[in-house]
Length: 212
Ligand code: DER
Image (cartoon, rainbow, N blue to C red; front, top):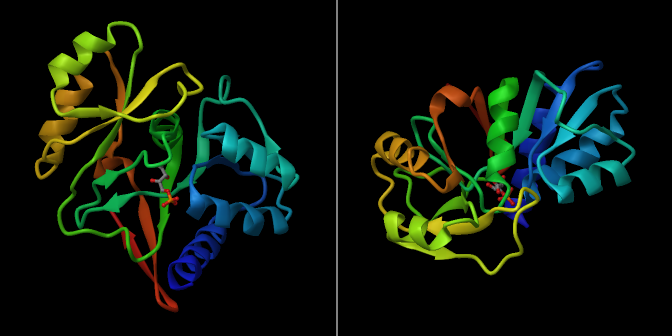
């Protein structure tokens, strides 16, 4: 369908940015699932880190070299999807419950590239905003956060509890600062523009490239 073709188009455009010898961060979700076969088919000698077991499994099945992120201190490029993309570059991520690892890979990469179909750009970010919470003291954290629902998911690979914050996101910087300063909250899905290099958005048969 149209959105799938747009994902493929964005993924192919992003794959052109990956060169032999690079260390590459691989995001999580259905758009990244389009990217991996394209990247694998180019048979570049690249070292990858994955942001979820799902991505790791798919990359390994495609014969890609995936390494633990533990000792990797820098990445040349990271490519990931997004749930929402604001005009100024703020992202909402975490639909796939992997935003904690995705943010660490994104901040590590020299270039962070977002790939998306035309349903992702929005005028104003709106919730729900994915969050990952420490299991210890969960009740206290939920009380202090207020407007939060928990997802019916197993704990994350890092043992965190995945939920969604339903408050307003029209002031993303203030909300991101408040959430990041909340004891018991491991990570939230607001990614600031300073973390994003480029968004590649499939629109019909074209791609829109936004550089921030
Ligand atoms: O969970 C995530 O952050 C994913 O990258 C998500 O934002 C995009 O998933 P999709 O490519 O399946 O829409």
